[in-house]
Length: 325
Length: 261
Ligand SMILES: Cc1cc2nc3c(=O)[nH]c(=O)nc-3n(C[C@H](O)[C@H](O)[C@H](O)COP(=O)(O)OP(=O)(O)OC[C@H]3O[C@@H](n4cnc5c(N)ncnc54)[C@H](O)[C@@H]3O)c2cc1C
Ligand SMILES: Nc1ncnc2c1ncn2[C@@H]1O[C@H](COP(=O)(O)O)[C@@H](O)[C@H]1O
Image (cartoon, rainbow over all chains, first blue to last red; front, side, top):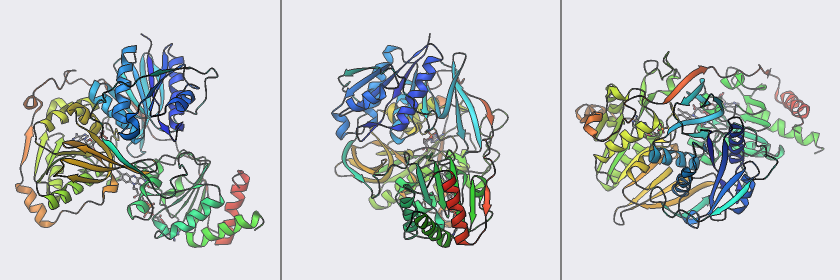
């Protein structure tokens, strides 16, 4: 039987996330190469905009206007809607490697007992089996894995595919919510945004990152200044986050965000494996570090050995000078 | 307050020696084992809650029998007792099986809160804690940065990390919570704790002890690693050791060349 792939769409500020668009492209490709089909799911208080966006990639999108999604946690509701769609022959469920996407994947796995292919950086068919590539063991190896069963849950990392629309917008089907979430849904009492949260790290073209080397919260002023000059967004290593210098939402790496900007510039970051896991897809990497043996040298296109408190301000001055003050 | 924390033994990330064996499964002999980082953050939060509110912190592990060594580290931090599910039939168990077994083992215990990690540093599946919540039919409060039970109201509030900051969630207890680094740095075991851990009880259960049909595949997991390869290496870059002003010029040249300024 040809596969049916279900994409769990995520919505941020009323729009489909970039990761969801990438997953939809991946799923459409997998459907095409196997003679199967792909469909998308949007569950949101106001799903229409994101559903239409998802339909740019997929032939069919189910759009569920869920009032509960506004004041209860999303994943138990999204998982319930996904489960309802299984009746239509869904063989593979694809969700993003985000807190919400992983919650849906985990809830469905617990409810259905399907195997999980986690952290897919790419996926192909080998015969009837879906085979995914994943970076494992803090970046030390890339595995190819499969589930020898007709069905599986797949979680997908950013960058597994470039988002490319199908050219023919799919059909959007509006549905009433299923009613009961797969587990009792916790209430959301409040949503709090941290300072600087307007700028999305994942979508930024330039990311300037401070590590332990910046020495304290004040050190991030220099990082912010460079980010501002380069039209970028500030990120951080875990050491800087754990020290409380900057909120967790800025963390890049295995347990933080995954970024793939045109430019990644770091100051005072050693380049540990777990940090690299979040930035190795960057196109151009520049690192400023006073230790000539810092591991970040292995991945930098330009490795600047020097004190960040000297090189950083000099770089700001140079960029300003070239722009005519 | 009774808190049960799911603690998984993982290769010590500090040893930086994780590798797969010839069978393409994690080579557990290659690195010393420690409690998974996120589980330790959960354990620390649990210990602090029980210090404040009274009650008990217990740990739950599914691992080969040698898992008790790693569990002692959690007991030395202050957990009062442990439950280990150890069974040869579970070697290489896949994610749905792990979920079924941990949920069945948790169901043998009484708890107000069941804590797990958001994900593990070895498998990084990030599915097990949510899956256990689904099996038990309990509310899931994931990606916790702060845990605040209200014993009188029998509810718990959790700050859940979001893309922009955090959401404040509330659910009735018992509930399942997945834990993150933002909960705070775990304590080092004291000498007294290490001594006390030796006499704390670890109950070992087999799959048969748990009852039910936990191994529907008869111990054959459909999930398989087909192959493994090293990550691609990046082309070697250029190193600059010039004085700051010259280095800055070289960086700016590089940026201009690639049309980044
Ligand atoms: C399970 C697990 C998950 C993890 N997840 C992540 C993650 O998601 N993201 C992450 O970043 N880390 C993560 N880590 C932590 C990671 O292993 C490193 O500890 C961390 O990345 C180090 O941060 P750092 O490079 O800022 O600090 P350090 O390693 O301390 O490096 C600081 C660097 O700054 C340089 N420096 C100091 N002063 C100056 C100066 N004045 N000028 C120039 N250079 C200077 C030093 O030479 C050094 O290289 C994880 C670890 C584990 C175990
Ligand atoms: N074998 C295990 N024993 C105890 N807890 C586990 C085990 N496997 C997973 N867990 C729990 O589930 C969390 C998420 O694991 P994972 O989904 O494998 O990334 C871990 O942080 C643990 O709290």
